[in-house]
Image 1 (tube, rainbow, N blue to C red):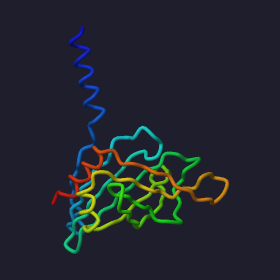
Image 2 (image 1 turned 180 degrees about the vertical axis):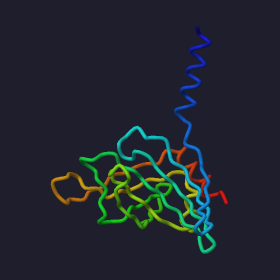
Image 3 (image 1 turned 90 degrees about the vertical axis):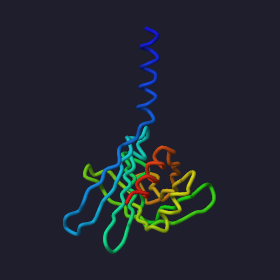
Length: 164
């Protein structure tokens, strides 16, 4: 019985720290390569999960980070401002942001950046977001929500960035 308990504890700890796998596909239209990872569902409604994509084409390499928001009542993403990212508790960057509904009509914020910012992420020990959100559905008042990216998810993004 004790051995079974130890094995169960070990398996549960493994599954709690395991992340989504990294997937590679090719876009046959322009022969670009797409590398992406989707995080496991997060314990909060915001973020529901992160989707990190790297697009490699003959012309350029671009990155897209989508943050999904399952909360449909408060903390809806606001398109009035771009998302700010704080790296290692010091440098702050403003990243081009697009707010849109996903297939389930839940709000998502997609950040677009290039190799220059990707190299900054590669050396990051921690990443925090300042997300502009609507405080309530009754008015247009914008406030901010702050998120810290879990270390395993950040490490997975670094793997995607490093892949060719």
